[in-house]
Length: 236
Image (cartoon, rainbow, N blue to C red; front, side):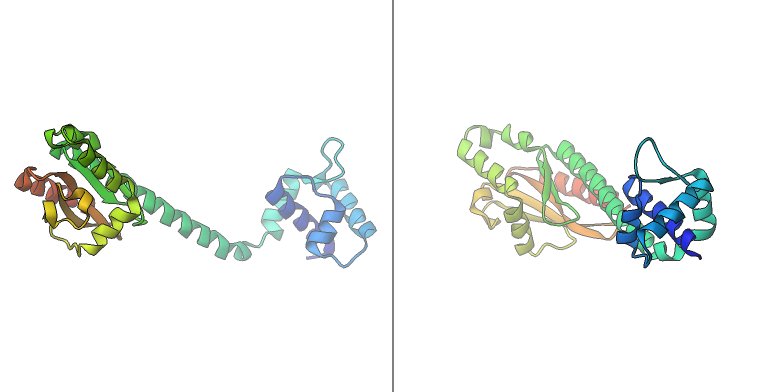
């Protein structure tokens, strides 16, 4: 590749990344050509004459023409130099997309739990640092909480302090079975007026907790069946 082609390649690469017309000084500073500015200006003048680049409006810089891009694609572009970065970006995007897909599935599962059981339903998200929950109004409408605003506020506080709630779940040594923690069996005093039903879920390589929080008079066998079915939905 001769110097003029190198200059064309530098102009096109710089324009691709910035969208700004490219001047000779930019080429010399950014791409370290060991020639004088006058030489680069002559090369750019020649490239413009040959219609590889052109000067837009009154800008001092130049931008590629379609002919310039065609030459770049056919002769100058280094696909292998871009390969590692392109693959790395694709893998990162796939990972992010997988997380978003998993979150959507978890939101669906939590919504089903909440609607079916009329309790608070929750799940830790794939990053396992936050808890998503629905159905708080379901519990607050229960007589136990309507008549005891302090108890209601304590439940809200526990759910809103995501880190504390996740830490609680981790301390409970939860496994793949559906476990019930009734009243004072709960570690946190704020929810000892409630029952907690919880299990682990697995979703496309992501692991977390999913469960219910509600009055101690909740329908345990019914809720267990609902949770079993939601776990099956998450697993497929």
